[in-house]
Amino acid sequence: MCGIIGYTGHRPAVPVVIEGLRRLEYRGYDSAGVGFVQGRELHILRAAGKLRQLENKLASCGTFLATSAIGHTRWATHGAPTEANAHPHKAFRGGVCLVHNGIFENYAEHKQILQGKGCVFSSETDTEVLVNLVADERVPGVSLLEAFALALRKAQGAYAVALMDQDEPDVLYAARHSAPLLLGIGRGENYVASDIPAFLPYTRDVVFLEDGEIVRITPASWQIFSLADLMPVSKSAQRIDWDMQSAQKDGFRHFMLKEIFEQPRAIAECMAGRTDASRTAVRIPEMDALPVPSRLRIIACGTSFHAGLWILPLLEEWAGIPTNVEIASEFRYRKPLLAPGETTLVISQSGETADTLAALRIARERHSPVIGLCNVVGSSIARETDAVIFTQAGPEISVASTKALCSQMLVLLLMALYWGQRQNSLPKGLAPEALRALDGLPAQLETALPVLRTEARALAWQHASARSMFFLGRGQSYPLALEGALKVKELSYIHAEGYAAGEMKHGPIALIEPDFPSFFLAPHDALFAKSRSNLEEVQARRGPVVVLTNSPKPGLHLDARQAWIIPDAWGPLKGFFFLPALQLFSYEAATYLGKDVDQPRNLAKSVTVE
Image 1 (cartoon, rainbow, N blue to C red):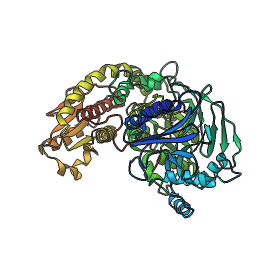
Image 2: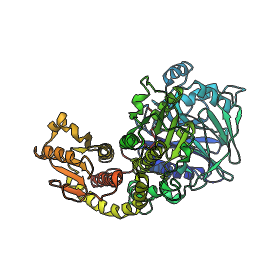
Image 3: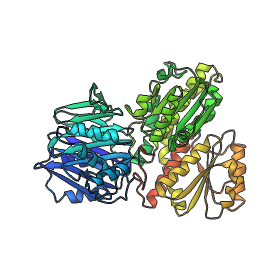
C-alpha cells in the first residue's frame, strides 16, 4: 500500500514522478504529493484525494527546471487523509523532505523528545517525526547519509523511505525494512520506487533492495550500503521481462476486466515448462531438492488464503499429505507447533504481505522448510524461502485480484500432482488425464468468458440493489464462495457472506428473506446432491436463489428458479470457470453502482502493514 517514486536524471523530474504515481495508483491511496528542488530551493506540493487534485495544483507551477524529485501516494495510517498529512514531509529546520510507506511504531516517544528540542509539528503523521529525526541527527561533521542511517536505526516497524535535500539537489537516498523498494537503472538517470510499473516506460533494469539496505543515487551512479555500518554492498541489476503493454488497459474499460480476460493466457504461461515432453507428468524443478512433506501448513491472507483452502482436499487425496490452511495474521500471534518433517507453504501475490512474511520467519525459526508461491521476482518472499515458485501471471494492476488467484490455483494443482507422482499415490492415469484437460483449458475458457460476462451483467443488474447476499458452496466450491463474497464486498460495497452450504442450518438460515439473494455454487461433482438439498431449504423459506451449475444431466437436475449455466470441465478444473463467473458478477455489480472498480475505497494492492 502507498506508492513511492523518486527520479534523478536529465529529464524534467516532476512529470516523470507524476506519471510514475499514476502507474502506482492500483496500490490504493487517499492523498498524493511531490517534492523537488528548483533554484536551490525545496518545493513541496500535496493534495488530498486522487492524483488529479495534485495535478491541478501543479498546473499553475513552473516545475520543468527540476531534474530530481520524489513523489508519494498515501494510504492513511496516522492521521486523516488531509493535505497536511500527505507526503512529502519537510523537516522543521533545514531543507530535507521525505516520503514513507509503512509504520514508524515508536514515533510517539521520538516526537516527544524532538518537541522538547523546539521542533514544531504540522501533521499527525509518524513520517513527519522521522524526517525531523533525520534533521536532528545531521550535526556538523555528520553527512546526510550518516544522519539518515542514524535515524533509521532508531525507527522500529516496517518502512520504505526516500529522501532528498535542497543542498544536494541531484541526489536521492532511500532505504527499506519489511516494505518493498527497488531501483530502476537507466542511462544518465536512476529511479527508486515501490514497484516496477512506476518506471517501466524508461527502464527494465532493476536492483532489488534487501531489508537493512540504504541506497544513494545520482543521475550517473548508484551505491548500496548496509544500514548497520554503512559498508558498501555489491549488487547487480536484473532484466525484467514485462513490457508496457502488460501494464496498460489495452482497450478495456478497467484493469480488472482486462485481467479477468487475461486468465486464459495466464494459465497457458503458468503451464509452460512444467510438464515433461510426453505431457504425462508434472515437472517442478524448484522443488526437486526438497523432500515430500509429511505434513503441509499453508499460510496466506485474503484471496491467497482462499487458494490454499481450494487445494487442500486435492493435496490430501492425490498426494496423501495432511494439510492445514491458516490465516497469516492469526498464525503469527500464536505459538504454533510445527511437527518434524512439516513443510510450510506461504502464498502471497506481491511477495511482500506483512503478515505472511512474519509467518514465514516464524516457520524458519522453528526449522520448517518453507516454500513460497508468489508473482513478483525479487520480492521478500522470493528471497527468504527455501524454494520459490512463480505464478508467472504478469503484472496485476487492479486492487481486486483476479488472474493472480487463477494462477495460484493452477500452480497449487500442479504441486498436488507433482507430490502425488513422487509419493506414487495418484490414481492410475490421473496425471495424463489432468494434463490433457489443462492443455485444453485456455481455449475453452477464452470462448466462455464473453458469454459469462453477458450473463453476469444481467444478474448483477437484477441483484445490485440487495443489501446483503449469501455465497454458498461445498467442497472445493466453498473457497470459491468465500472469494465470490469477498469480491462483492471489495468492489460494490454490498455486504456479502461466503458460507459452507452445509452450515446454513446452523444459524445463517435465520437471515433468509425475500430480498436476500443466495448464490449457490453447485457444479456436477460428488457433493451435487447435498448442494441440491441445501438449495431447497433456502427456497422453502422464500429466499431468492441463483444457482451456478453445469448443464442439466440425468440425475443432476436442480429445481432452481434462476440457474446460471457454467461450462463443464474435467474434475477440479470446473473451478476455473466458476471463478471468473463470480469475478464478472462482482465487476458488473460495481460498475452498475458507479463504484471505483480498480481502486476500491480503503483498500490497497500490497498490504505491507498489519
